Length: 252
Ligand code: NAP
Image (cartoon, rainbow, N blue to C red):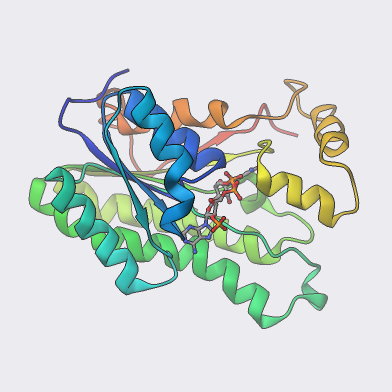
């Protein structure tokens, strides 16, 4: 695939899971990467793995629920590497419960990180991308956007991310910026392990149970997602915008 030598990317929630794998893959493709995590200390493992592979990166502490921190993270990235080409909105949390037992705090927290977080980063990043006349934005949605019991907050946020994606594609297209979403199915990460434990099951058992229903008969891994993100960020996807690509091993 390969990215232009001066490409600069920022990935939120890149300290572990899909975000870490995405940051590592974009670095491998030639991008300088800002590895963003709520706490800068949590960027250390991704930063050292990128550097060990010969890549360029910087670790930045930034909570995507704080507008000032998001603006500072975007500015820091541009100061460090001179431009901004790719934004991957990956940071995420879950606060699962059936709606009648879900408090306002858990509703708001999930909407704030996934939806408002993406809005904040795009608003800060688009200033630079519009000036450059180019940019790639990739938002992490989820199959949960189609509905998932116990995840009304998460499903709503992930569906809203798809609406945001289509709208921004229209708004930013004239500036040479593409905006797409990737909607993973069940990907084995700390997030799905936590879900298993919350349900009182063993993470390995839940993976096995889910795998038996997925058409490709396995759960996904972060490496299944990063190739699609890298494609959307590459020159090969130059005329692709406003789309949500489901990466879920086949429809259930
Ligand atoms: P993960 O392992 O839990 O990683 C999420 C990362 O986001 C963590 O490093 C977390 O840091 C960070 N984060 C959370 N809140 C943040 C905030 N306010 N500011 C900055 N960073 C924050 O999750 P994952 O499975 O890799 O998921 C990554 C993305 O894919 C999420 O958007 C998720 O919704 C989506 N997705 C995942 C799956 C799946 O099956 N795993 C399926 C569909 C979609 P902390 O440690 O500080 O919380």
